Image (cartoon, rainbow, N blue to C red; front, side, top):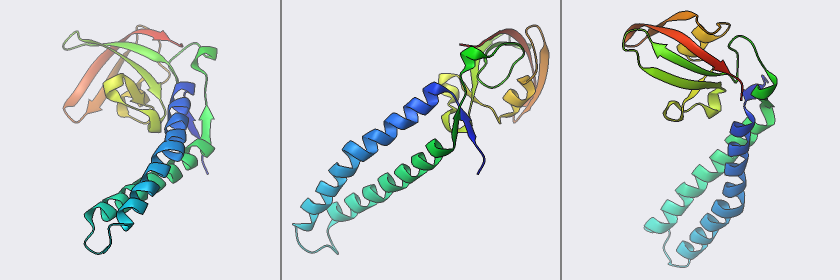
Length: 156
């Protein structure tokens, strides 16, 4: 299987989620199923069916997290420098609107645009890889062609 690149923070967040699922969520849903069983007829027991559905979700998420974490390759951005690569925190300015945005290029499983975490496989990240401060990039987006200038590149 192919290694999954991620930052230390991304690995820690997924590991914490896994611990909570195993130590808190799983025991809670098992108790909920046991309580619902005590109410009698399972065929018409909405609490039982809801608890079983929740259990299925939790077990699926545990398997998914265990798989991702077993393939994780943690990359420490603070040990990197130079042109843009995985882990870089990049400040861009939109050449049309002069709007500044800052993103950190991260692995697919930890990407979250709302928090400024840009998927390394996204069109913007792919366009930025290998560029330096002062470079311009053209990115084809669903809204059309966009131009950005790289203002700064940091490895934190």
